[in-house]
Structure formats: structure tokens, C-alpha cells
Length: 88
Image (cartoon, rainbow, N blue to C red):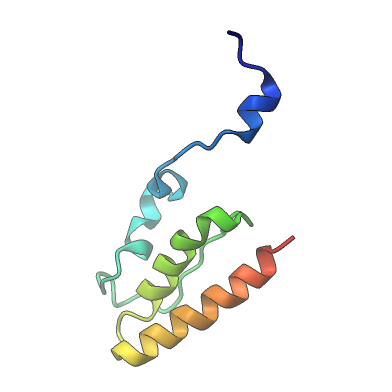
């Protein structure tokens, strides 16, 4: 039985989040302080709700040098802002 384009558009596809990360920016998403000499991190995210885990990983890594409570709050508030910005 042939598959029509409308059926393909409704199907879900799983793509590894790492495929959206540029190789020279992989340390932005590690959750560890690997390069403490950086004072600023910059990364552009596509406005897709399915990529929110990638946004959370970035924010978590940005706050890696701070306490667990600060890191949690920073990631929570930042992901809320990103989610509101990407909502239709």
C-alpha cells in the first residue's frame, strides 16, 4: 500500500539532539565546567518546542559554576522564557 505525503507529515521522526549542535560548541551542552575562561556563551536555537531539552542543557551548562539551587532556578526560568518565545 503506498504512503501518501499527508501521512508522512503526521508521522513522528526521532532525531538525536546532538545533530543540532555545531561540533565546536559541543562543550556548551555538557553540564560541566570545561572551559572556565569563557565569559560569554552564545548559541542560536531554532524556535521548535521539540528542542527544549537542548535549550535546558545549554542553560544548565551556563550555570554550572554556581550552586545547585541557582543552577536549577536559572535553567527553569530560562527554559520558561524560551518556551514562551517559541509558542505559536
